[in-house]
Amino acid sequence: MNNYLVATIHPWNIAQYQQYSQTLPGKWHLITTKDELTLDKIDKIKPKYIFFPHWSWIVPEEILNKYTCVCFHMTDLPYGRGGSPLQNLIMNGLSETKVSALQMITELDAGPIFIKKPLTLTGSAEDIFLRLAKVVAQMITEIVTNSPIATPQQGDVVYFKRRTPQQSEIPEGLSIKELYNFIRMLDAPGYPKAFMYKDNYKLEFTQAQIIENKLTAKVTFSVQNNNESSKSCQNNLPKK
Image (cartoon, rainbow, N blue to C red; front, top):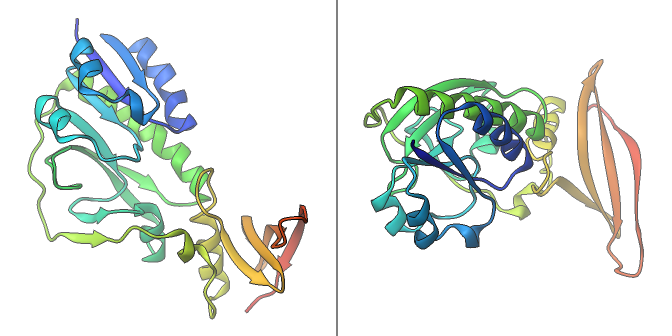
């Protein structure tokens, strides 16, 4: 019987793990914190594959060299190597992408590809991550079932730059559609929300919708004085 290890931190990936680990063959193990990912612990499991759905840290080279580590990148590699793939895809005007399941090597996002599957980019970032988790579960199932051979990436390499929290500040001059995309691409737990400053308030935007050429969103007002509390309200953003 083969052993398999999944390392992930997000609830949508953990929920999918709870499903496929009950139906797929083999013995399954789950890691949900960075500190758990040690060579000593992995050596005790001896997994055939280590899967990394939406993992946020660099995997030590000693692990990459000893085990077949598989990550899932939200671009049609080699297009879109690098950080913040979802945000960069939406900023580049794309409405769909492919998820690449690749073997991890020391060079980031450069390893050979096992399989690719399509993914639409509609809705909020959270909506997309929920869909992504299901696609990743399908890919894990296919890899475990068929043991595909990874093949080298082909095509021109395009790099994405990881975005900083400061880049979540809403820039001036956006159209209604651009503003909608800017808000939704950051609207997921753990991500810095789209924001702007007004007087002594910081305004954070979520739940964006376009209805009859008008953008509506939930806005949270945070008083910049630490002694003040935060309050929320619904706000209609005028058409630009």
